[in-house]
Length: 383
Image (cartoon, rainbow, N blue to C red):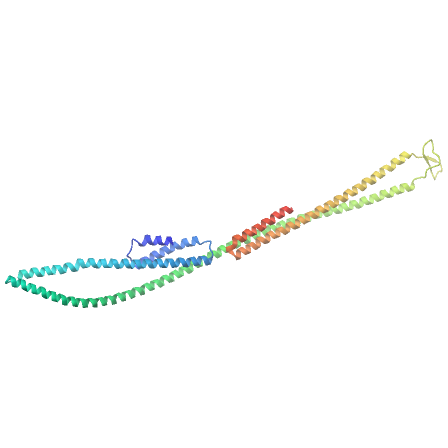
């Protein structure tokens, strides 16, 4: 409003009194300047708030404009009275005084006879002039009253015509201002809708990009998890096969040992050449067999069985450890996918809420960012 008042003061103060059209032109120019400032200052406000502020501003401008009209009318009236006074002093008063002086000079110059009679006749003339002046004054008063009445009627007609013209101008001004206001409100609404649409599109693009990124990450994670699971399955299958082979090998070794003990010959009655001997059931003779060599042949078989059993146990532990690691990786991938889904969902819901409620868009966007960031931190903890 200060912009409007300063512009009207600087433009109209040197011009008063002036025509009403000049005031109207200055008002339109000040309103255009004020309108541009109003649009810039209310860019981030809602439509209802902007409309209320514009109505209050319009009321203040109308009051100020009416004050300027009143001030211009008073200045015009004072100027007209000053002009009338100057013209009366310039034209009427000098003519009346000069006529009286010329009348007196001509009477004294042309009057012939006794001076006292001449003076008395002039004195009687003055008395008659006074009577005539009284009569003329009465007539002038009546004429003045009549002229006053005519002047009042004329002034009333002029005032009526002026009021009619002013009402027409006011109606035209109000129509123009209403049209300007409608255009301005339409421009503001269009601008806010464009801003809302731009913000919604931006949030949608962000959500789509985030969704696409999450889908790509999920696909990559699923592929990696699938490959790892396939490798783990292959390793487990290979380990199981090795365990089965080891078990079969251990069984074969056990059977060989059993057969070895079952086929071993019984000890003979007497030693041969001072050494322990066993009788051969086939030959019936004495075959020298060293006990030390027999024990030595049995010892490697027991060590081989122990080593193979220990190897089977280690393979079993390794298989169980890999199975636990695989289950841990699967659990981590599942939680990561769940948290990514939560982050994407919060972004999409935030974008939709921002598009539906633009005044609360900063708060909604902040909440969605907090949820997404929290999901990201939790995902890092699981990883």
